[in-house]
Image (cartoon, rainbow, N blue to C red; front, side):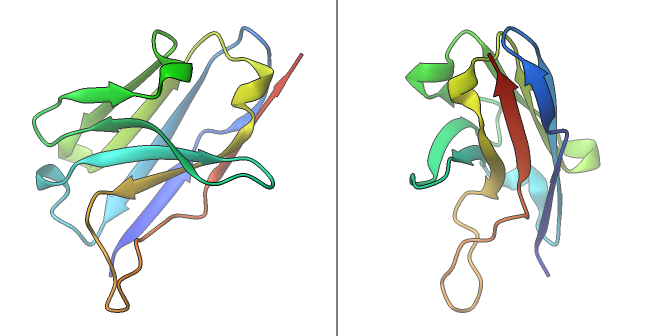
Length: 119
């Protein structure tokens, strides 16, 4: 069974930093691209950053230069280092294994981790 467990969120002041972690199980982690998404109330879930199995990365324009995605295949974990946080970064953050779906065709998501940035 695929499980994704996000952690590391919290309340931080603008300009601060947080490091999110997502521990994956039930998949051959090293062969999948992984992504971090975020969702604010009333908005759709958007891709923030992604990393391929070979380590190539891409970022949403809004976080370029501030966020860094990385992965450690030895412990099946993907990270999101978030620096220079802004109030608009406030959201629930989720990780996702690209292309991994359940028998109903739905993507797997964890419970998410709340990030709140105060001004």
